[in-house]
Image (tube, rainbow, N blue to C red; front, side):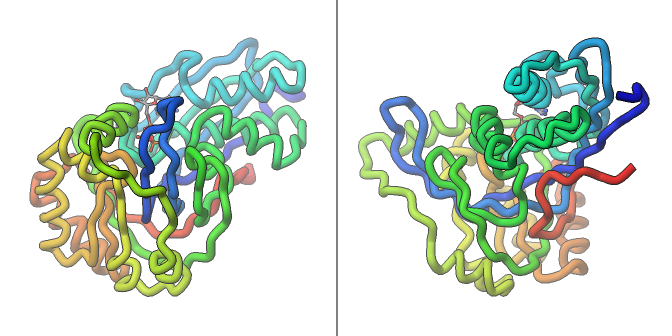
Length: 302
Ligand code: ATP
């Protein structure tokens, strides 16, 4: 293999347009009905041959990304190499644009990106089903980062059924500091203790709205069962949600476990207006605009 050979994979962030959470199972996990939508906000993972596994990261949030073996990109390389009896001798460079610990599956994106980048660099051509198995071993959101577009995730979120989706426009407000996903689930358990938590199920109205591409219909059906828990841990997010709605967003919700908030808007012009109002409101650190659906992990041509 030529030492200057490199493979770059682009991989999207996600927003959950429905996140239905069941009661905690005996193993501590929760059954979910998770409607994932990939959005055009991307990390890029570049793999180059190296003497041993090494991770580097660039971007505004790079300081918060672990560069050791706990990085999901490193774990992806190790799992793939082990499956093929290889050493994970690779340098993985992450160009990070997805907010860290923001509920947009940034770490999962890098895991899926690294997996595809290493598979391509090492010429393995691992069957898609095996790549998806490795993704599920890495984490509940990782299989979706590989496939992208729109999908319903059941189980812990890792069993995926592709969905049809029209085009939608989004603004994301990035909060100061992250929220730990396990902490948000613990708060969900605390808030729902003693209540009958229904079995999680995808909403037929939400799925129809997603298919139709009608932003008003989608706005009426967005739902996140983790939102009360995220707001309980981070009450200031309510002001961010209000600021976006006040500026004309059709709907607002916490993205996944937060603290990023997501605003559905009618068109790109509305996105710019809502983003400017959110920035002026000083209720968030920064904003991003994006469209959905976006493709899953994709090898970029050199
Ligand atoms: P999700 O939406 O899947 O719950 P998230 O977007 O809230 O995830 P991530 O950005 O994936 O959160 O990061 C969660 C934690 O995972 C970070 O605080 C960090 O310690 C760890 N982590 C491991 N690998 C990565 C990575 N490649 N990029 C960012 N964080 C990573």
